[in-house]
Image 1 (cartoon, one colour):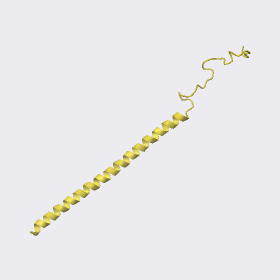
Image 2: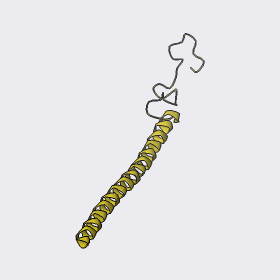
Image 3: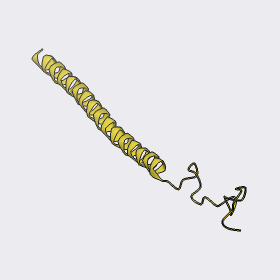
Image 4: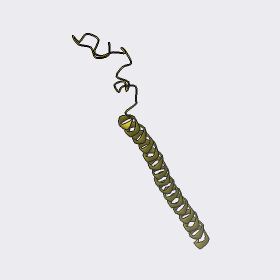
Length: 86
């Protein structure tokens, strides 16, 4: 009778130990995966912020006004009554 109780106690201890190990491993893996995902998300957010800041700072971007004031016409004083360039 004592050997049956000993076998049942050993099996119960193994089941409880296995369940605790699975729980601990799952919790550790979940937190590690969360940390890895958080690092990847922060790296992506940093890159996006750098690109947006560079686009806002660049004065020669496509949305900015043209740098050459004479790009469309060579003489801005053409319609003036007295033109010093003629």
